[in-house]
Image 1 (cartoon, each protein chain N blue to C red):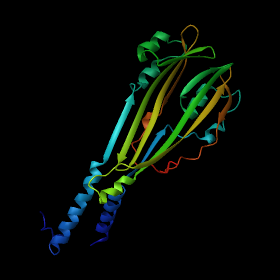
Image 2 (image 1 turned 120 degrees about the vertical axis):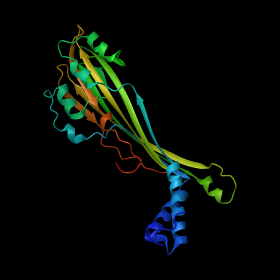
Image 3 (image 1 turned 180 degrees about the horizontal axis):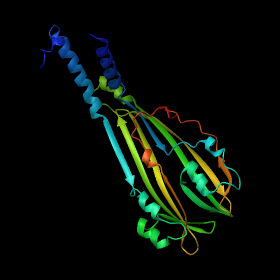
Image 4 (image 1 turned 45 degrees about the vertical axis):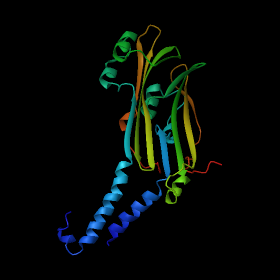
Amino acid sequence: MGKLWLWIIGVVVIAQGSAGCDFRRVVVNDPISQETLQNLNHGENSLTDIVQVLGAPDEIDAKARGMVLRYRYGDSKTMRVNFGWLLRIFLPVAPSMNLGRGEGVTQVLHIAMNETGTFDHYFVQDPPAPPRFWFWPF
Amino acid sequence: MALHHPACFHVPFQCWLSRWIMVVGLIPLLSGCAFVRGEVGEPFSEERIVELQKGKSTRNDVAQRFGAPDEIVQANGYEIFHYRRYDSKLGWLLFFSRANVASDNLWVFLDEEGIVQDVVFGNRTKELAFQIWPFGE
């Protein structure tokens, strides 16, 4: 039997054997790159300049003098393992015995504009560590 | 059963078996996949956005083109109309899935007299992709 068929059989066996677990991920918007913020200068850049670099904000809020633009990014991962699946080998029914865990991170960029409509300052946290896939909930 | 293919002529049973293994292997792969899309709101017409003229268009012009805003924000002396649209694309194959979500945002800045002073539009959903593989970027 050729290598191709061994490979196909291997994939099928792994696929069937892994049917008791799943990996899910949800990503909201693109990650915020701090490099794009390096060229913003206090009192110089307008709203148009900022939008050209970062796109339209997700939120705009009022502040004491001026306004605040917010950009949001989110990433979440969940993993689940159904140990009951293994009992299919011995039992006619497969009871559900799931262990699962989800992790999520968010990143918010806050850009303050002053009352003249120019860039004032920004706040952003360091890029968060990416969430992990792991099933152990304890 | 097509056992007369030249490659199968000498080893018909092996060829038959390998085909069945492939079919049996592909059926669960095909039955366990899905592509799902969810949209909230109508896509923005970029032609209509371009029609809005700074210093000329009025609050009514904005409402005629885009309807009532999802949100009105008062900031820095402006009344800001906010229109949103969401799009999500989910790819799922057996035990792997990934959902990508993005939003389009249209912000229209109006002065005290209701005249358009600025228009900000961002289209993130244009580049939203269906993806299955949850690992990596």
